[in-house]
Image 1 (cartoon, rainbow, N blue to C red):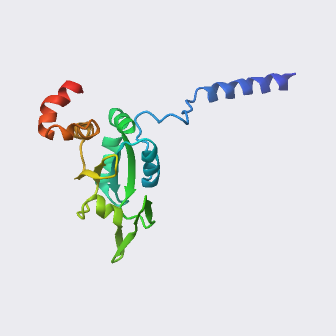
Image 2 (spheres, rainbow, N blue to C red):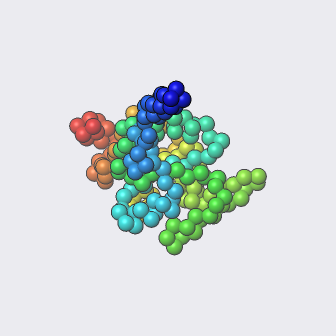
Length: 184
């Protein structure tokens, strides 16, 4: 009888502890987290539901890439805006695996001891720099690559400028001075 009582107490204790953990929903993005895709996944999704792409070109050795992940992409309002308005792609510019997007193939280009991926060269318009944030339209055409680390406030203005198609209507400076402050 005592063993049954102890077993019951232990079970209740474990259930109490386990029920206090917040188990994230599998079908919902985590709040404040960009739901990164591969280029192939974004291409496939875009065929079904066209949307702009935001590509984060990075390398494993890039310190500013890590700062951008930690300081900019981790902001809740930025992550939520990106997930809602873009297909976000994180692409290692030194990846050796080939890439097929539609009828186009992209391969790793060896250089000395390292090299660079051909898609990274295309996205950076043959001027690789890391990090580089590249905005593509719904047809995978480059809108604008932006090299370097971007602070969160500036990044939010940029991501909304392209995401809301404001780049088609007005220069960025006018957007920031007028439209951005009215909308956001």
